[in-house]
Length: 310
Ligand SMILES: [Zn+2]
Image 1 (tube, protein in one colour):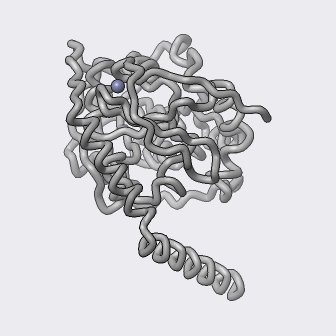
Image 2: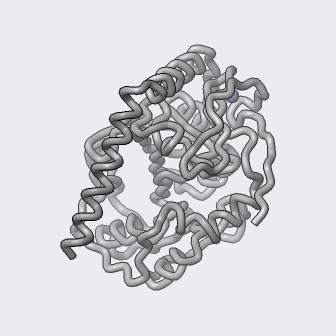
């Protein structure tokens, strides 16, 4: 497979004015991270083009990122579901749900969990992985498409009460375009749940894990706020990290009648730049490298002894 590259402007403010941060990412795949100097959005530039990503998601993604995909998915319905807990904690848990859409659902664990609460609900997914699609179909999930950029919203005559977007927004090639589609299929009182890695609080080694070529965007509370404003969504609640994931920022939004004005601020750029540069500097120091290496060795030894005991 030959992967082709493309250059892109900032998805939020359309500027072509950026600071290069890194060209290294997880698995050694090409990962050119930049920050927009106008609005502070971090993104990949240049990056693989749309077709290259589509090929990668259909054929290679599971091999890299989901090595333990289970065809006989025996899901534990009693398991704690972070989305349910968070919606309840924020007092935004929906009372009645007829239709749920999970964009980038994977095997559909969240959909199946919500079906156990809203037993009459109908489940829908957009999911590129062919292995996951088989599992989804076995669980009565309607697959609207495999490509979120395609016109999956054109031929549906219903709208959704709940749209789940768990760790998918950072994978998109055009978040603004897709969020406008998402808005168009939300019921007036429907909600969208979005969770992404928080680029203001990266919890992993940047070059070895946090930056990855499938993460085309690296959001934070400022850039998520602007994104939602630009597409006509109103953020009801937004939180940075909790017991489920300290390195995550998540929000619940609903349709807004008027389009709110985004705030493109150089301060947001400076804050993002400082955090990434400080972390990169730390990761290049000898004590950090020694600690990182010894942790990896310990983990390796533990996994070997665990496998032996089986
Ligand atoms: Zn920008």
